[in-house]
Length: 364
Image 1 (cartoon, one colour):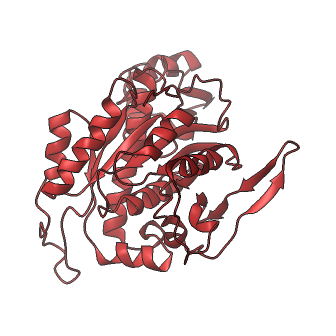
Image 2 (image 1 turned 180 degrees about the horizontal axis):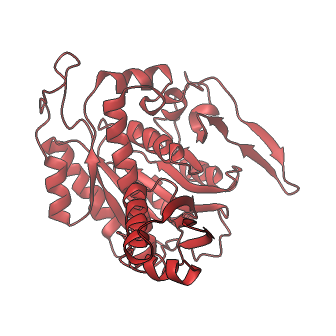
Image 3 (image 1 turned 180 degrees about the vertical axis):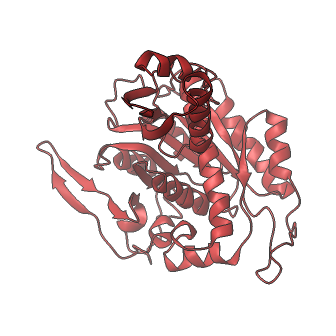
């Protein structure tokens, strides 16, 4: 066996999402051959790639069939998270992908979805930050059990930078870490916009594969400030199957599809899809309706990223500051892992196939 034999065989293995073979995409490196033993490394577009096993089996089969049926094949994986930023990276220059998690209305579990998405991506090996942009109703400091903590400052020579608090491997920043919980944030729009800009420019986010932004519900001033301040890679829309929630989710999808924004929708996730009692694990009760989110995704021709069940442990985890992805609830963890995997795939496909998102200039 030679390196050329291996590369020729792997030229028949397609990357399922990008539609080209691994060799053409320069995803194969470090080929080592010792007799019948061969090993190499495949460079993934995200450490949270859910297709590792499929790619691994395809590589092994290609070499055994096309090169040597007696070959002992070892496939290693590393990752270089894809990014499509072409803005000069003057803002958040160490962040590869900026993902806004949005909802048309409150109460659909957007913050819970954002928290567990961040954790699931981190578990896959990605470096992840979580910005709580819901200034009037922050919740991430509660969900991660860091209420009452205060972030440290550091001097970078020009101005002081806020160091986000790290918990469960995630860098977190929330207005809830800076103000007294008993005080209401009674700010006009310009003050809120100023706070959001500070979360971007005055926080030391460092090197991140993904910065997840937990947006406030609706389609308002903060959303415009975000897209005017940073090049958002894409948005993930959260809804429940309920008709009222779906009607508002349509507005969120429509907002980011407007000509002056042009921010891609990575996909839609349906939260509180069904209820399964612990004592009846095979039963599903569709309390808020069935497949509403899936049908909405089909209607707007956007990817459907998954269904998250309505489970008591999700609520309990958020209340006690230990999100579900940190616990042992295997069934619900699986739902979040599948959702995060689909989101990571969607981001990689968006980066490969679409123009880079620019900071927007909105005259409204």
